[in-house]
Length: 335
Image 1 (tube, rainbow, N blue to C red):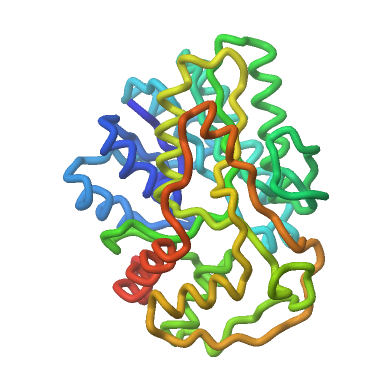
Image 2 (cartoon, rainbow, N blue to C red; image 1 turned 120 degrees about the vertical axis):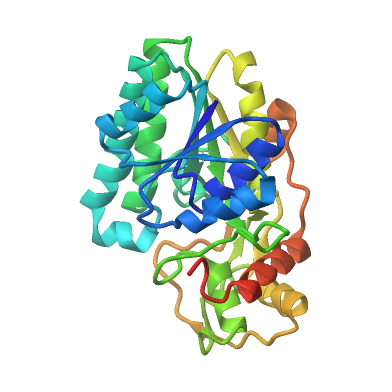
């Protein structure tokens, strides 16, 4: 049985679908601070499976112990955490408490119950401001904000855990920019308040919730002057977790892999693709660059192909079509 912490969230819910399709039984642990129980109901609708759902706070060992006592957990996929870069700068202590202390509590309870397999949801933010692209797994690590630092600290904690006991099976998956939604349009990204990522801003502008999209910077050294990022379909990303899970027993060291497409798309590329997918105009205005933003950030995804036999299959058009289907069917998200 697989414990998915933060399993009701955007990436967690899509990963639950793919785990169930691959034959795994799933337990979801979530406090619903940035997610909805409705997403789990919809995962059940998509998969015709019943999901074991546990309410709890990742920082509370008593909540986690209940899960491990009630279910025979073979492995953990750890998504639970706060994830807004801007908010992390305003509330760094909340981020260190929730993300770092929460992971320590999880690992301690796993240790108590003899569970030694974990896949950690990390991020390309651990590369800081990369000097070149594409980004490989052995690039220098740094972080420019508290959110990124929590990911980096947790990676270090997991490396130290493995050094103390190399019977652990640990995979660290560094995501680039997840977008899109399940093809059914039943589950997708439902940000609370101001979105953290480009795609919800684009889709909310297309549906009329926002007057225009702010494009930060038009003078970068890219093909159209706007920032280039590696956008990956959330279903491809979810399948990467299934592949990593299947590989865990075979690995002798900690597995660290990038999950990206290896392609970079600019902000204006994404706007054009979304206009094509939705048939809607996405008005935009240029705004000054944001500090810390880089011109280009995209993955070298060849190691994931070699080590876990995974590569992204869905392109920009499919990402935008699925994102639009979700947005148009659910203009107010899960509410």
